Length: 390
Image (cartoon, rainbow, N blue to C red; front, top):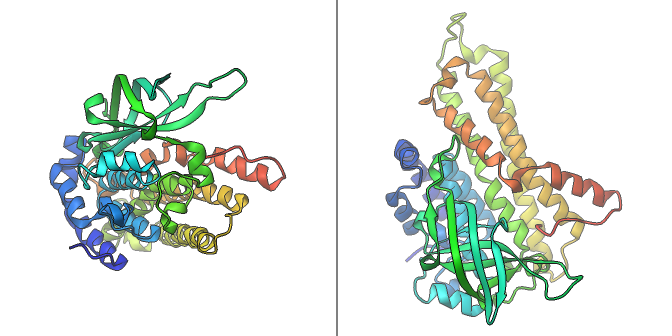
């Protein structure tokens, strides 16, 4: 039986991170998370952290989920990324209609769901649901999954109406994986393309973005975890691995820097002011982004516990802070990388992979701070919010 204790889950993640670090060469060569690692994540309960207890999950608090993600990323960012996005999909499935949950979990409580939310495919209304076709990219961990969430725009029923953004739940029998993942960062995530040709999706296997925004989901789970806004949970699931990247990069730098002599001067790197400031900035950034992360969810859950609306302005700010954390951590890693000198350019340098992975995380659309930042500034200046992904 799995222990529901949060400290136990984080301890498991820290222990597993040691093995993950040793498997990095294999993970990178496969360009996906190894089957052995996927089984380790299952056994540890990490994929079920946000799954309802009524459906065989742990229903852990968000703080624990993100701390586990950070711990895993300090060992292998690709593994942490795949764990986080697949685990957060179990949380989103709990927001779908109960029949959709039954379709997945009645058959297998360990079922994994990948995703690609950008509405790049075609959606047609048909009797009883929708028919979808097209190609969706960046579906992390899809090789290990029996289901996928695909984003799509439902065409309006009449002139003057806007298309409606939804997530479509599609079984493995209706899609194929096309191997396209030849990349420089997050190499082991296997974020390949999903191709669908005319799959039928019944109405109950769709989830409206607006329901996730208003938290009026049809899932039927009333615990505070499932009353959090969709955007708040999701954006942090794709930004928080970078905090673990910074932890790993700092540890890697300190391991070398405490003993290294500079080739050009023969002096200890530890005495170099540039090295000292890079380490100080990295450590202070870690404290800053972790405190903000946990403060945000303390505040969100406090509003839910008191059964009161979460102020929109705060949600807008939390959305920006999620993306800003990626920028802050990437800048700190860049400082460590620059201070590492020429040896950091070699592909076997440990800091090199954290540098690459952090910049890959920064490239995700949810982690670009400019849009959320402008939106926050606009709201503060009295203009309307323009983002439903919060």
